[in-house]
Image 1 (cartoon, rainbow, N blue to C red):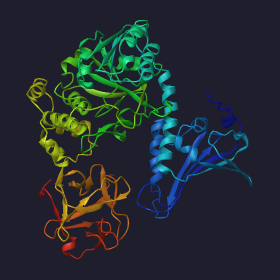
Image 2: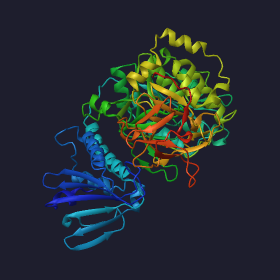
Image 3: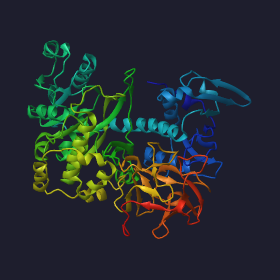
Image 4: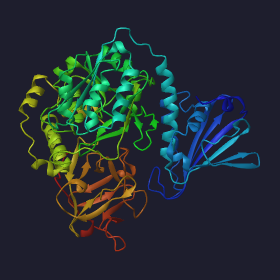
Length: 612
């Protein structure tokens, strides 16, 4: 444990931490100016008393509001909404919690003297220090604030979780782990962490399902090894490569515990991981619970704590994504960060579910192949059919996130995932499946098999429509529930289409030859008059552009566009300029010019309707 004394005992006045961001590393908008945020700490009261920010374009307050909202979630107290103990800041710094921080240079100002600290983990006598200034060379300011605040929040969360008391009588669980050609060390790390860090009276058994592994050490050697473990460990062999979904179904069918806990084969359970999951299921058997998933580096196997400030969602292509927990969910928990987070979707690798409820709700869709899409299918089904899905913040399990999957997908990765996504869209998404098909037209050509059994299950369970799910469970979904058009946006003069070019946030939107294949050329003109591509909106922050893709903020402003269905123009309201064809300087990006009603400013919106 890190010593807290130097920070709390010796400082007599105040400490300010300044984060500087150099030009061309954008934070809040498409600006090329330096950004500066200052957190001033009063060491007598041990509170951060001011949070200020500014930049060259007058975007004052953006970073301040961001930081304050996150500090509010730390304390859950409006009166000290941006409070943070200096000992916690010190510990988060000393932990070298973030790899990127190794690139930072600290300059410490002590009256008129300056001393450089070249490493964040370097020793220094902070008891005589009055100011610390941090110069950032390559890292986004918002990311730094997020990471520091996340670290501080985790310290507070851990403290709250340690005081939790769970019932003596909890349901026991069978832990089902599917593996295919897993390394010996990672598989046993998973098994040993389950056994060593779980109360044995709560651990009914560990079931290892071998999905047709080819490595010799996973055969007889593994069977002989697990015979000597303290908890019953059963190995089930699949006759042929069947994939995660069917292998988990086989393991679940053989389980005896009151609860089934599914884990991947490259995990590490932490102390106290199991009790919070089982306690929540004891409270409500129709609640499916996930731990916070911590990160284990696939390069060094370093263990890095995850955040309880993210939850599961999905994008237009039905890819699972992590997004920040919205304010409405923080408000529902009333500042108690030890309470579970209601999540629209789950990652799917790690979760616990009442065994009988697993059967009642329809287990997995056995018509899906290998892996992919089953997590969203189960998430939709749980919510739409009367259950709930939660992340239990006092439960932590580490997971090795690999840069690429080492497994083969019979038939090809794309074919398998398209088939699975087509099945879930046909059964659970109602009319919103057409939205997905416009985004990914190739999915429509995939043979997805017979889904009549799954549709009958939905009818028997009297499940709610997908519109209810979007309205009540995932109102922050990237799928706009009301929109004027969905599809390509074609320029009349050049006959080219807007194209996100696979670019990321803070990059320019492109324009390219129309290909009619959906994907990067699908844009939605929403009822809020945004032009969206997935979770990004076209944003213009100054006259004559450029047109940047930024996270949709739903506050209109620089993301408000008026489409004139007669003149076919897209007018940016704030600048009062119109979207135009590319210039000679860059023929791959559209421009902004004064509205002239020329053909170059005329745009045809695909699937345009008059009402949204």
